[in-house]
Image 1 (tube, one colour):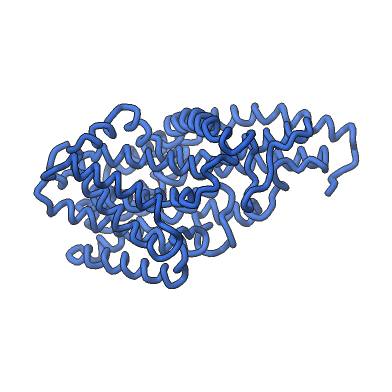
Image 2 (cartoon, rainbow, N blue to C red):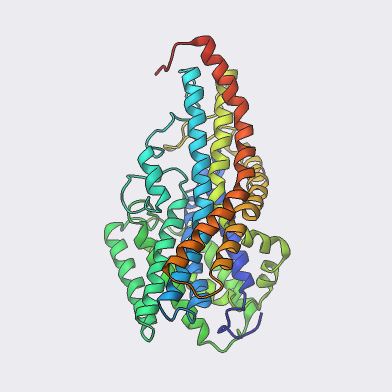
Length: 432
């Protein structure tokens, strides 16, 4: 990678791969199987990966758009591109989650004793929460907890925080980094006031968490631009970053210490933005670059894959009278032998399932939407043109998504037909 950072053509390949690694660690945290790591206190610190996402986004958006946002038209173009980047996959996954709830409803109507892993359209999966999710508003304290596709809370907030970023760049072009520092500091202080015992907030104060880490990433980009363009001892510095990150995640208890992570994330991003050390060479490998490319899909689709598998496990357990889904620490994971026995199979199973599906959703949903948006906004646009760009992206997206939705629908249809047949034989309506 060239040493300069002023050109938007520069790619930070190590940081791309780092995003993919963080996405896989989030998948590990959410695996719905009771395995040995679930009882390790530090396991919850894998949630730091979400804060790394925010910091990476701040860094990358500063790099890509910091010198390209000069007037209102640029701002509209930026908003259209962010919408095309984040919303299409989100809305497709929301539609698939609704289909799952409808499937639960049909099964429950056919046999009221079979609630699968949860009751259909329970809290978190209500009709009102569909509306807020469509509008990317589900994480502004309107609901007591996460709703529908849980990880989408961060995508929704990142969309609005990126608009705040554009507003700062446009309104305060000469004082942007002063504003970034002020927003980062203010958000961190306010978040600590409302949540002193944990950084890991989402549906309630998640916007403060997002601003805190996002603008820390913006600040480190300024630090990077002012650098000499190379590291004195890249191998040593990269190794130290890896050790520090692992040690911090493994030893940090809940509480105020967690608030130091955005500083650590900034250091890690700064060092790996040079792409000069041995760890960066590994991160530039083809496999890890693909993970980086698919990272948003990995993050957004994995809970749907998990929910689908839990439904199947619950159905099989109900029919065979084997307890395949049970309670553990206020969660309802699948049970596959002892926690130690379940660890390796669960890790292998879900990486094998999630990553290939993410590759498909990137190809069929993410990339077509972004390509359509780029095509529509390649020339100067007005507000009306920006709306046209967005609608064009959605139109092209629809044709690519159709095959995905239809294939998923066909896989669910067999279960629906079976449940309907049972319902016709039973004829006794819904039972509770």
